[in-house]
Length: 538
Figure 1 (tube, rainbow, N blue to C red):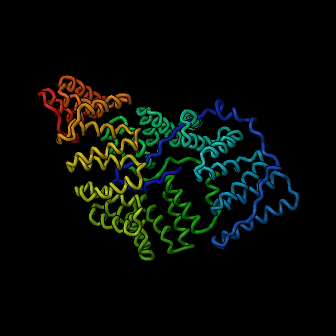
Figure 2: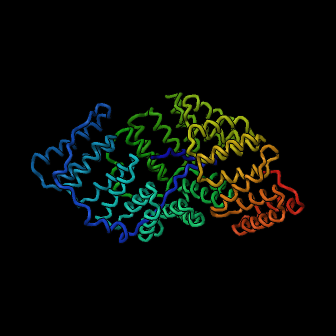
Figure 3: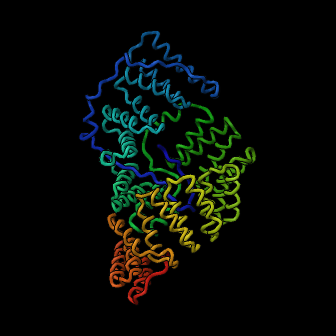
């Protein structure tokens, strides 16, 4: 299953759509065990391939597909050697995949493997086809086949690690990424893979270390901030998590991938150039993305998606004026195009004009009510500008539309606490814990509410202590220690509360957060005076 990613440049948002994954398999431990064990498909395994209906494609693309199909027919009719016939199938598969005919493309690649079993390209492209269809197990098999043929292929190793992560095979994934690092120690993609594997395995300190290393190698890979923030959240360092969230954006760690670069040049159509531009943006190749969108606009000058894509690329390059011009041009031809309204909203918000940004985000939602990113942006701008009550309906709709995102649940509950609606916050957190039982931050927040809410009908020190026992089974951090201190103080166990608070302060000092330690001294003073805390959040 694939998750929808937030757009680049959404710097105001504090939510993370982090895909946690990791892994690495040394060739001699995993990949090599497959060598010689998988039977090579024979000629009898060839699948029938026919031309699909091409009428929806641009004429230039139709010509490309027909030309390659004709070439395949010629190699077959002329009795050419198997390798040549296999390559003809593979070349047809490339244009079919680029045009979106994945089933036929898969048949072509499988035939190509059968006829040209020593060619690396065809299992590699088949692996990417399965990957884009959300079939990680099949994709992993294809990348394993590539590594049988070329054991030191860095791109195949990284993609194999990603597929293992998607399958939840964390140890195998980490071994693969580690092997990739042994070949290329400075690979940000491999460093990120190890970090995400550690995060999924609850090795939060190690996760932060590897992810920070990846970011130091590629500072423009702004998506790394998402996962680093999650690691710090799990460590209880919410300030560091927030600092990284504010820097999040587009741009993934780059990976040298010659075969996929070749694939991106296969078709010449507006849609193909749009896809190339989007892929380049995802990889952080802003100049290449802008060039792809511009080429697409030569073929379709008024295409709103291409204008929006160019605007996003210019925004990432720091050309705010150019970005605004592209978004406005998209709206001139397509006034209802929600993404262009959203893009303008982002520019306005970054320019310190939140009221105008709110208007644009709202317009985007009028045209596309299920536009999650626009609703996230609107809720966040309303929240940070103090319009908490107005942000609430949007937060409620976000958790309804995308309950699988934990961070909106957290922010929704925190907003309710800020509005002193403690009972609603408690009920929301109870619901959120059922949806996200693996997120200790939700339990931590509920404990604080039960231990320190000013509302007598909400406070429940005994339940808070029960929940704290659950939290203490997870890796410890100073936030948990502070929550435990609040709980013990609510139960009148002030000496123990003071001990826990001192330990939390020491932990904060150890991780370089002396500012937090100083703030926590205020609650320590309360416990020494044998008084409970009544401020669950700062």
